[in-house]
Length: 186
Image (cartoon, rainbow, N blue to C red; front, side):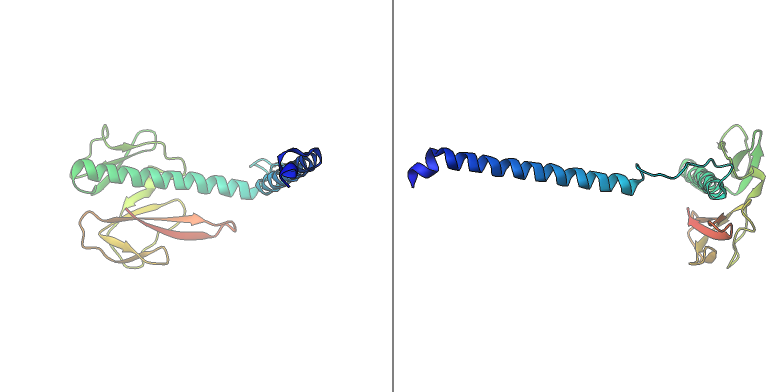
């Protein structure tokens, strides 16, 4: 028995063959899994890539992405303004080049300017008073509503007594080009 375990060629060769088979099977499993992952991610896609000009869905996704970027720019600027000034802006003004100026009691277009808006025109971004059920009127407008909370349907819900609270309302479009109201608490 000791001879068998210690060094008999027959058993060493047989073990070696088992290890080779296991290695080949392991490599095969890894290759199959990698191919399935690549297929799932679309690496081996056979579809012809269409440009945004001929594909309405691609145009919509581009519009939606730019719209979300604009919403992020305005929301971030509001947060920075509140941090720097201890209060939310009470007025908005338009600067050259479609820039949006956040203001308190006075407006200085050389400071607090939000630039880089691509979908929204600065003149279509407004601070409006609280009204329950309020939504943005269309996909070209963005409303900022002080002292409000959001409802589940993308509209203004209840009053928020925190003086540093504000919601941002905008209409996004879904894949069927239907306006969908959105409400974000800033």
